[in-house]
Length: 300
Image 1 (cartoon, rainbow, N blue to C red):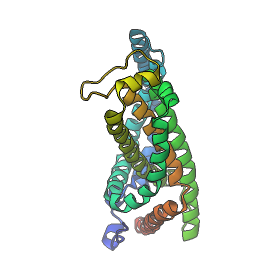
Image 2 (image 1 turned 120 degrees about the vertical axis):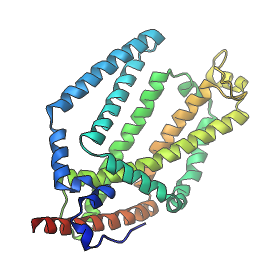
Image 3 (image 1 turned 180 degrees about the vertical axis):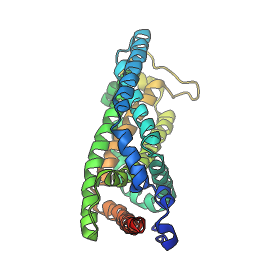
Image 4 (image 1 turned 90 degrees about the vertical axis):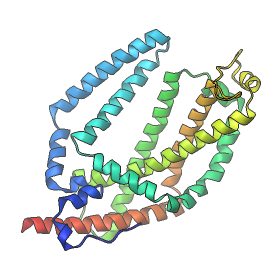
């Protein structure tokens, strides 16, 4: 995965950092992001988005009779607004673009590592899928509560991932004997790693969702679904005989849970961590080396 470092002609080129997902290593971009991050408009903008989303969520909750849509809409809209602001005002789009493309380009290498977790995961999750209590829990949730559950799993995964990646980054940095990186530059590196890991988790969760939709469509008749959910009738979908809204909800719930499981596995399994952080160390070494040459060139 590791690419050769840039030649001397590229050391003073800001575009190298931008193209490699490190825009906040460029002083001008870092200062611009710092100003945008501490701008009063951030609080005002989030307050306006929160108010508008809460109003919209309240209207949806009133129209549908589902009070959970209000907080679900609030959290979703605020999160989308925060991501949009980070991508535009803070200039974080290059970080996301590089991390996503690099992860997708590394899928052949990651596949053997991911398959270490899949057998046990599928065995455990399939056992839950054919469990009546799980159907009674997840199939009867309204849309707002189900989405809040997915957001809760995602938030737990992000917090756990951020904590462990920051620790691993410090450990790799110390082992390399490189100068410590702080502030937005360190946040840049952590964000690259988090997005790369999040793409892997998302791909796995989508795979699990697709598996249960196909598996459920083949074997879970409406009669079984009605017995397990203790409902008089399930809400059938038009695409196949056994597909239903309840099956979708169970699949979404288990896919989100699988994503959380894989997040924990990815930063605790020794083999996975060794392979993943070997690549991280190579990227960190190159970024720090180019940063030192870049700053030296600018100082002249």
